[in-house]
Image (cartoon, rainbow, N blue to C red):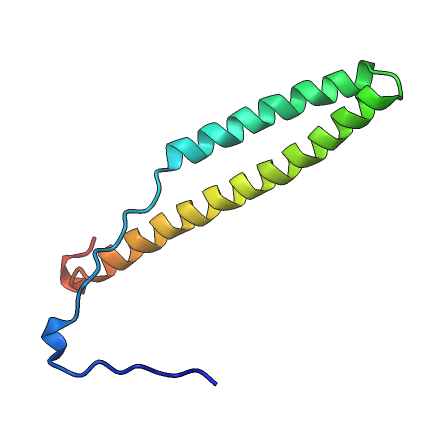
Length: 100
């Protein structure tokens, strides 16, 4: 069981933490582009490399790149959907008579 600590006092004393700015989209897209180019290079190398330890290492690196590319693309999608949600909520504050 957890012990809950309660701080009593006026609520105005509560520290307000500023919201951190969301990460920029450009660095994420740069990572996606870099991973995509590296993955294409490794695919080409795998096609010309005969079976053996070097090809096994290339296949391992290829699998890691696929995972990294997936994570970077998900991050980009989440960031872009977050920006769209922020824009939608900002436009929702405008009175209906002023829209259009």
